[in-house]
Structure formats: structure tokens, C-alpha cells
Image 1 (cartoon, rainbow, N blue to C red):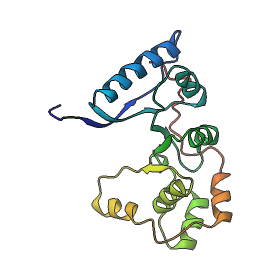
Image 2 (cartoon, helix red, strand yellow):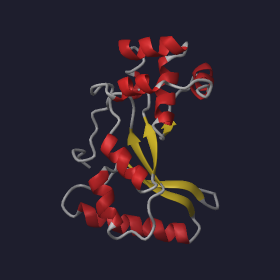
Image 3 (tube, rainbow, N blue to C red):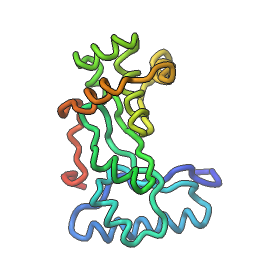
Length: 181
């Protein structure tokens, strides 16, 4: 790659077929070696649920620094979030806007309107207030700037509870225990 090190290296999906826990553990050991050798600054996971992480931690020397999961209003994966927080694993929220499917949600639009912000800003701020690191995606300069402008307001506890209680909406449909790799 022409670089001295990689900032962040993730196992993208947990192996779930027969022998998956061993595959995950072997892969993690290779990551740990690369980390110890200075080739990687941070090692982590992506799309790992609590039971995948628990199995990995049985043999891991280094706790994952990050678990990148689909996380947005209507799909907050509260159990995985709580487990990661308890183990000091940063949750990176991929698809914090529900791949755009949340932008026209009437309930989110109403809440965002009360703050004079966009639904995208509401979703990003909601992630931050849930102590996750949102990773919004846009190629539009105006939206990129808007997505970064989320520190001038705080979502009230009542609105946070309302958003946290939303039923499943905006999800990708990809589930780590059902992916067929």
C-alpha cells in the first residue's frame, strides 16, 4: 500500500459457519501480531454481535478498540452497544442515516423541526449522545458540512427516549448471524 502503517484494521464480518469462532480467533491473532509489529495502529471489528465478541475475548490478548456496527434510529442494537461500552470498545455507527431511508421519517422530521435542524443532523447527534462515533456518508459538499454541524444543540432526554424507542426502520437487512459468506 506504500504506507508505513495502517491506522485502523477491522475484521469486516464474523465467520459464522462451522468453525467460525476458531477462524475469528485465528484472524484476531494475526491482527494482534500486526499490531505488535507496528504495522497497524488500531485493531477492531465490524458487524460483531455480543456473542461473537465474547467468543473472541476468550483467546484475545488485545481487546478490540472498535466495533463498527449498523447503528441508527430504529436499529440501535442496544445489547451490543451496552456490551461494547462495558468492555471499552468504541462503537462506530455505520449507516447512521439508515442509508438515507430515515431522512423522510415523519417522526424524525418532526423532532428535527423543533431544533431547526435536518434529520441527518438529528441522527448524527443522536449517535453522539448515545456515545457512538457516527460515520455518515455523502459526496455532496453542502451535506458534508451540514453533517459536521451537530455540536450547537443537544437533543433533550425526552426526544432521546422517543428516538431510542423507535421500532425497526431503515435497516439494511444484513444480519451478522445470517450473512452467507
